[in-house]
Image (tube, rainbow, N blue to C red; front, side):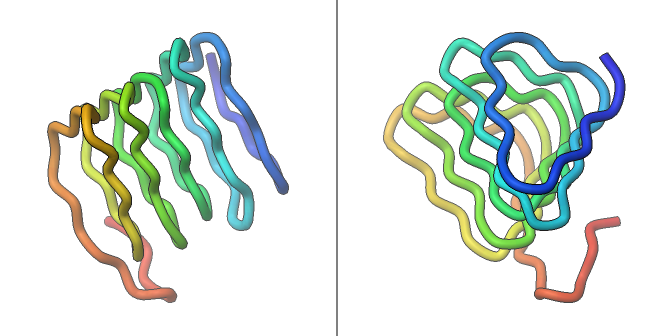
Length: 99
């Protein structure tokens, strides 16, 4: 529980709550992981469950076992068959930050 800030890459295998931030990094959420956080990263690769909003300045990839309960702001979105997404998705420009 708390705030995670990183530069390159973080893989989550368990449960994380709070906020996750990386201006240039990649967040990987494994299939059995649970994230209850607002996420602000460059790339988000989701295989597990995320409850919270996701801002990904480059792209978001939702795997077949992913469950997203929140909004997504990104430039590129990939959704695989089987993924669950409950929220709103908005495209952001490179300089824009989600409100």
